[in-house]
Image (tube, rainbow, N blue to C red; front, side, top):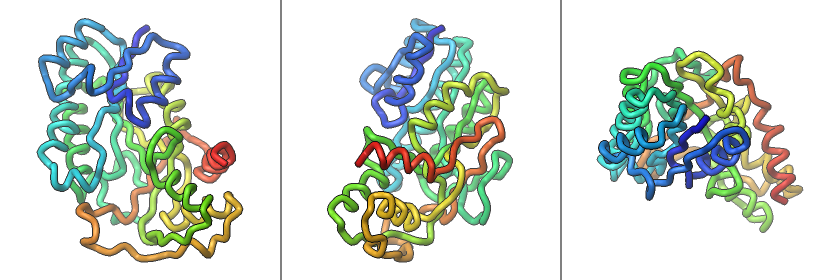
Length: 274
């Protein structure tokens, strides 16, 4: 069986391609090989390759830049996804669409469940939510996977940045009033390889548990053997960044996709990184 991965050069795409190749023939497509905004290109390529399943990881993910380049954000995250969904439907291919906890407004005080109503507060979240709606409307034989706070070896992310600061024993100031579920990309990719065994629908997949950015940074310093007092908690400043962030974006895990705790996953990651 053959599968396709869009956004194959991205942080999740790379890991997913590596995992899928253990069992499947994989078409790993970067934005150079597949422009998701080009409807004709998408249609022709899918009908040529005829994958049984498409993992749609391609996205415009810079949350702050999306505020200024909102047309581009919707072009890729929403209408590019619509092109993929239509072509997948016509090619009789299952579709796995990677979405985000940013589709929620962050007003809830407990982990968001799949049944909770989305209400994005930034352009990135709005564009991804519209992508979700297109997928569910056009191609019901699909999976919408929401995840959050991804980190991994091959990307610039918060965990890697804090680890570098810890190695230098630098003092850092970290926001203490935004909460989410840190998710190891390797864990997510491994879980995604099993998703098509389950019924179509919306699933929340992240490492179990919740913390603030401050708590996450403090934990990294602790595990790196560095003085935790070097991590200084600060409140978020409304208007300092172009995009608003949900104050709470932790995702409630589905019983079918229970992953290990964020601390266990991060412990292993830090041990390998140091």
